[in-house]
Image 1 (tube, rainbow, N blue to C red):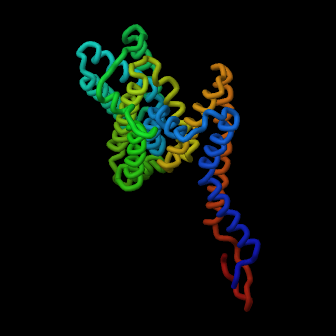
Image 2 (cartoon, rainbow, N blue to C red):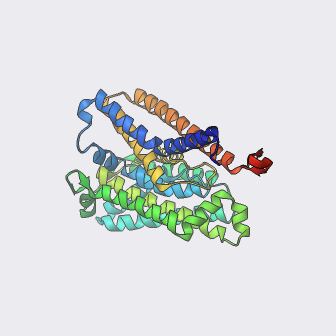
Image 3 (cartoon, helix red, strand yellow):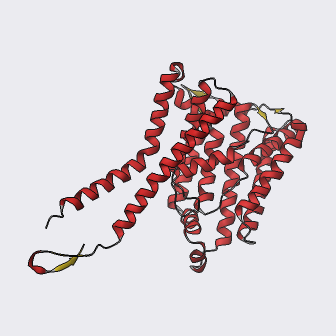
Length: 346
């Protein structure tokens, strides 16, 4: 027996809603490109996308780590300050020894140690991730500005030149960003670490009772976050040709917004690396597009904030509508009478 037209139409509407939610970020990014190309015709050309991705590379790689952190139910507020501090430590070692690679190794060790301590405090001592990482945000920002009296440290080296090298607008930096997202996607979807990260955010206590070593995987989450922060440091130093004490200012908030726009819940449990990448790209296009308009700092911040709120609100409303529809689909409807007087449950 064919379903009633109303029920069939409801399923069609639900399908359209789900596809609309999936393609929302792609549509918004396309509209932003169209809008900025109309307002500032010279901004849009054959290399605009590559330029946008390359300029926002630190944000994009940090977003990979933030996706894991937030899926596991842990919001990390420290990446921006740690990126600044790691860059200044790299510059300090470079200035003293003349070795860029030694500086990068020291900053990598710093990031890993801080990530490990954070993982222990959150996983073993059960201190809120927000509290721990907020404290790191404060002391790391202060230390970054204290090094070299808040002055930038110029750096040079074959690695930095390599990252900026490229062909036809495609730089090595863009390839690094793409490979980072690909690796993040594979780890999230195909490994035990990815599955357990979702489980930690979905139901921490149930995951613990199921025998998962939750303390260890919380530690892994923050170690992974520290690695992406260090990689963002390398890309930032390559872009600027120097270590700057405010290089990562506001980066953590942008990464959180990008992940949330991409559909990851603040409470954790679900998320997508592809959607986080689209969220980061949206913020990058918005920032670069507004910069091309020559706005003052005040109006730049105003319009960026308004745009982010509008997009975020629309994204969250679409996500809630899809989830509500999925819950309704799982709930059995009441019995109805069909031919022969037999009752069946839809």
